[in-house]
Amino acid sequence: MCSPFRLVAIMALTACFTAGYSQGVQWRTDFTKAQAESKRTGKLIVVDFFSDNCVACVRLDKYTFPDSTVARSLTGFIPAKINADHEGKQLAKRYEVTGFPNIVFIRANGKMVGRIVGYMGPDMFNRKLAQIKTIDSNLPKWQAAFRQNHADIHALVGLGLASTFQGNAYEAEKYLSLAESKPSKGQGNVADLYIAVGDIYRDTDGGQAKGIALYKKALATATERSQGVYSRLMLTYLYAMSKDGKPLAQEQASFLSKMKLGEADQVMLSMLQQMLSQQP
Image (cartoon, rainbow, N blue to C red):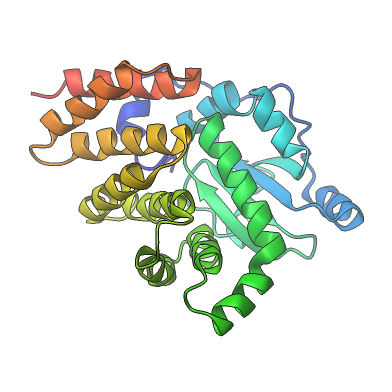
């Protein structure tokens, strides 16, 4: 199944072609060798599991991975690209890969740190890479800080984000609820947590209304442009998929169309606009 946060309906509007290896990133294709390199360097392995028929995987290769800032960010990892339909089938099963693209962060000992499911442009992808590195380095510190002080905003946001990378919405919302009650200091980090929890609900049956509420909160607390653009794109998508939500989707799309977007975000907006134009 190729499910870029269930934008299959949108992605299907574009041509589907075989995923290629993006330029700039030095991809490894042997997981065992990647593990050995990870052990030697101390870097996390980031495995891009892809499928032959995954349109969103192609878009990552076309718009996200070739971006110079993404290529630079990935030098802090051991990047591996594995075909889950063929030679990587057993490895994909081991890491419970069920949708594509599915990007899994793994330590040298084979333990999974977290995952990203679905397509995103360079800005948000870089943000996720920075988050996972921070989580890997600071998780024990945050856990200790939270035990001592349940009001530590950095620990709350960090532990919440760590939970979202594990797909645990319940734990993430526990930390989010506590973070929401704190002063606005660190508000931008809370916006990241709204986005991350919203991403989980976006892909959950019956979770779209919750996703909309979370992305709206992310938009209200965003302190960086990438947070705002991503939240508006997700709101456009979820409103478009909701009953009677077309006017609200058009409103978000209209706002985005007046912004200077990066290529990947512009492509996503164009596909959303095309989907809206085909709705009654």
